[in-house]
Image 1 (cartoon, rainbow, N blue to C red):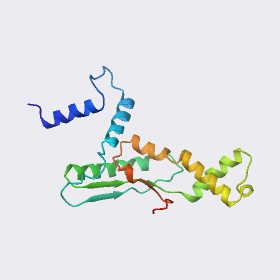
Image 2 (cartoon, one colour):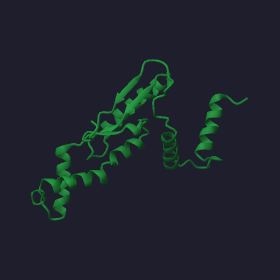
Image 3 (tube, rainbow, N blue to C red):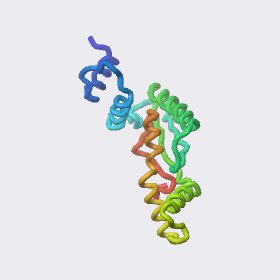
Image 4 (cartoon, one colour):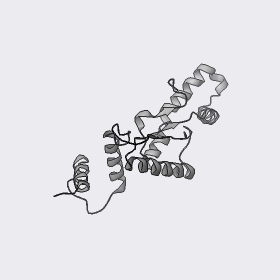
Length: 168
């Protein structure tokens, strides 16, 4: 008889499309493939039928302009440990991710981008400048959440929020 964890391992390998293990481990390929599978299976969402007191962490939102640094890596690691521990104990656990607009920092980044084009913010007017800020956010704003995913953070990404979202 195959132990439950053995059945789970076979299920994971089958779902992830693994027939045989490669001779050499490729962490980049394995981590990306498995993380996508974990997300698609909803493994980071709270277990609806879990017992116990609900456990929730709202991620302190990193600035949309930046790249992760050691402080981010530390809080992501600690929060991930806490949320996974709650899940392993059968609690309905939710880790809500998000990013902050970082108004001044974002403005500076967009102004530098415009300066490289030979344009000043004041030349554009408020509405056009805001349009350019939102374009920048759409193009580059996901960089930090991609980095958080690469750390293996088990957030419920279907609930991701941005501080300037209309529903907040």
